Image 1 (cartoon, rainbow, N blue to C red):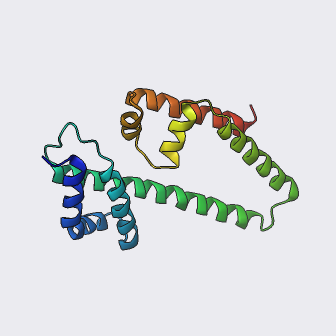
Image 2 (tube, rainbow, N blue to C red):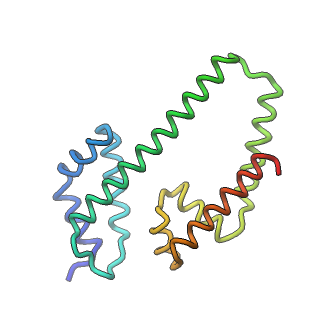
Length: 166
């Protein structure tokens, strides 16, 4: 019996064009291609047990989740660009004091990120920088999804405190 990863990889290849059309409902062509590539890396890492009953459905659900995640990421980037543009419209040249305050805030957050306690640090990095879902992290580390969620919340709380200067 072939492994889940082998079945999903094969299906990903055969369903490629249909998946691109499906992702195209939510994303532009280039972003859909990126999402499909990212799906490949997730698919090859799928555990062998228990066997996936409906591999095609699993693959399309994965595609849907990637599209939603990409949409959220793009919305965040758009908001950041709009906020930056609004700041520049208000004051074309940020004054030295504002720049110094922003640098100080960034330094505090970066330091706090480096000093996050384990396993909160590892879980946060896997989630925010590697793009793994809470469920994927839970499977990878052999802990519950609730544990993963609590560690992410802890990391976010500590980083927010550092940003605020607490």
